[in-house]
Length: 159
Image 1 (cartoon, rainbow, N blue to C red):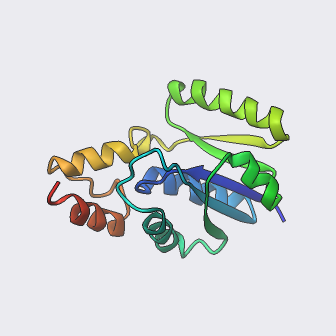
Image 2 (image 1 turned 45 degrees about the horizontal axis):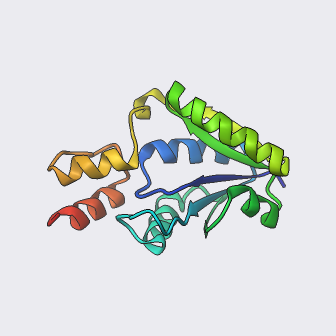
């Protein structure tokens, strides 16, 4: 079985994330969307909320599993026998950062990294941008799944 992990904070999951997840799901037998737990980072949604949102918006894919992990992604890969990490690239600046991580991951564990160019429709998206736009009353319809949109509005309405 060909397996890949798609790590990230997903706070919240965007249509850009879903683009990468759905494309990976057509290439691999199983895609594990791994929510990275970073206790030092202040998140809008709890880990459980993020897991639930991702499970809901990926339920129709059929071969996507959702999990959480605190630590290095390569440690998760080793523990779960997953040889590949998939990462979306929005711009050259993403590549510079992601290449260093990919090279370190490979050196530490032999885990490969597959870079996927983001669909140009979503190249400007980031979770932090979605939160900021909603916080200031902007509209992110079509940039995040409808469920996520509703939860963002609900969570940030009094912020």
